[in-house]
Image 1 (cartoon, rainbow, N blue to C red):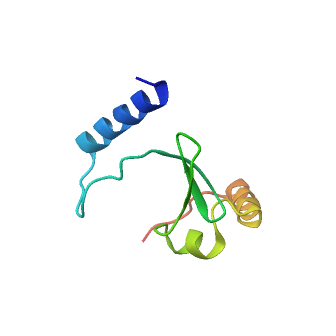
Image 2: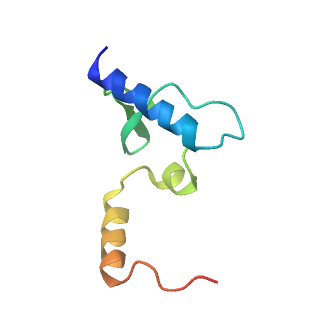
Length: 83
């Protein structure tokens, strides 16, 4: 078995043991990175992302301005207060 496929199988096994799914099964792929409007699986295949949260849907993944703002914010403080 190809090492990437072996790792994918191991991740799915761990996910099925330690998570609760309320709607369907996990997609049979492992996303390794994201950029702009695309996510990339372990083989490097680009997949147009229709399902990410609101911020990624409007701004894209890993937008340089957002990354810079997060870095500045994290240097100042990560967490201050919860109600």
